[in-house]
Image 1 (cartoon, one colour):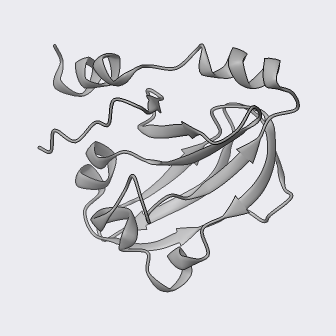
Image 2 (cartoon, rainbow, N blue to C red; image 1 turned 135 degrees about the vertical axis):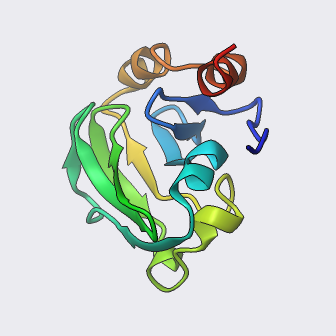
Length: 134
């Protein structure tokens, strides 16, 4: 199992990571642990730009040679960017999950909404405890 859990990111129990890009925007992808569990990613179904998403709802899918996994919105907001590179290179999710393998950027309604959502998430140590059982 990989031990890659960048300290500067926040994490969901559903194995997504978030990187705060501005007062209202976060970049989201799946963790190294998640991509390792999935195996070789062969397709990523991205949401439409400008689509509204609700916290807890599935907004994308990652399909691997083993299974199909939903990606859940960690906050309510609007999709402001999608990683179009994944259309032709879904394997970026495997090779660079915290970099080129990002999935979407979502904008919250307000900085307060974003801070509230981020407050519910795990830090790197919390996520490592979740994935290692200790």
